[in-house]
Image (tube, rainbow, N blue to C red):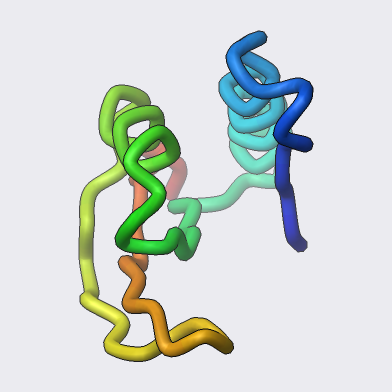
Length: 80
């Protein structure tokens, strides 16, 4: 699944709302964790994910099509 916020819609907390909804749905499944990938240079997204409890678990060298590095991040949901 890919999620993105259009540049003209940024700053309205839509990313946070989408992620909270995804977490609620994953918790109901039940899932043990959520993983995501993010560009290393996307400071706004990294800040959001860290604030919401995601941790960097793997550095992704030249992960993106333009050779930009990224991070795989994960959040444990507490389901067994």
